[in-house]
Image (cartoon, rainbow, N blue to C red; front, side, top):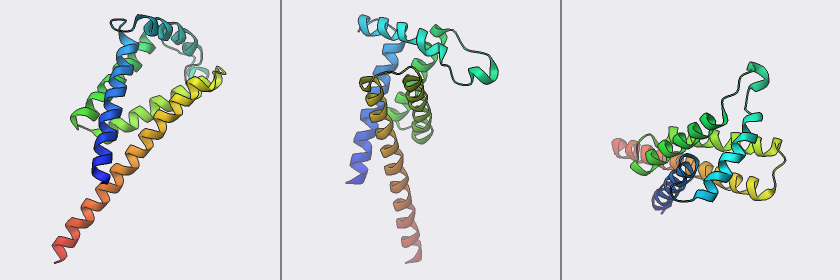
Length: 146
């Protein structure tokens, strides 16, 4: 049961992040959403992490493209089953960054709620994966002891 839930959650997250990454990169399918995201990254750029410490911030376009490409790559890793745990951790870092940025810009619950939901799903995926890993190791140890 847990394995099937983990697989379905992994597939759903992979598809979702590929879709979100595509929205960041190209206006091919959803032009209005893409334009909205482009405008928002101009604001996100002003709240770039570590700007106060380093004095550096990327251009809004580069920031948006980097986030989009990272989401697509990590979503593809989740779908293909390659490096699922590191991809989940990277996506959790992106979602945490988005949550902090939205909070600094005083965005409403419609923005913050969706980020918290995706972050919650990523944490559940990580917990289920670690639980599944522990169970498989325990089965192997039990078989060796018999």
